[in-house]
Image (cartoon, rainbow, N blue to C red; front, side):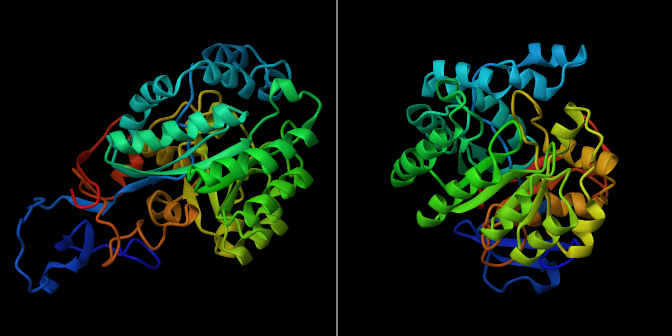
Length: 386
């Protein structure tokens, strides 16, 4: 898959790398003249960029299977959250876990992604909701990169939910997140981007704006959980800060889409949550297409609304539920996902100067990566040339 529009398919292709970076990608007839130290024959297999999961909550403790049972019995996500379940129940479990325990519980989830060709993953905090526990989550995310051959981008999501000790004091909690947590964690080098949950059951546009102002002062890019359950005008807010992405977006309106297009903000679609919550409101794909908004796909791996650790399945869900094309799905977990993380200069396409992150597949055509369910055709994964 080459840069630009489309997939840029190359028959009889070759990828050459040196010191973990691609020096050539294209037809084998254009092979560099330098002598290769090692040649790997892929026997006609397909090669894509390493896959990118650009929205996960991979580090947490416990699970919420009991809430799944409640929803099967008719409870809504909002009603469970208002009764003290939802995010807050995972907060309690995460606070009780040590950093080592968080790493141990997250590793199997990460390994499932890597086994499907993922080479870059974004991991959010947001289940600590207090400085020491947000720090613990972010440190655990960094530790995962030290234990596995993968690039981890960490996102501070302190404004994910209102912790019990700040009940009915959202303004004070935003003061804590923006004025104390964010500066401390950024100073420790634990934060690559800042996220928030803008929704009726979470934080208002005005509150998120205060946090994003603080992030901007700290020199950090922002992302936003926006328009998942209602239209809060969060996408337009995110675009006003030139956000890397706005995510979910089932209820975004035309004005929000237009603002995202002007700002270069990617739309990250999360079909796992859409499926798991039995949502009916489909994100406005045609509006994104017409406006030229980059469309990424991610697992949204989390214990409550998307316990999904398969980016291949996320592609299939995007095709079947959102009517995305095969090309859009593949771009959504490579080029567009890199855009959503601010990594377009480093990963997401096969071109000289970018990291040699590859996925090599036992397939006859790219559609197989989207078509199959519960089947993994990965032959080999290459991370930074190894």
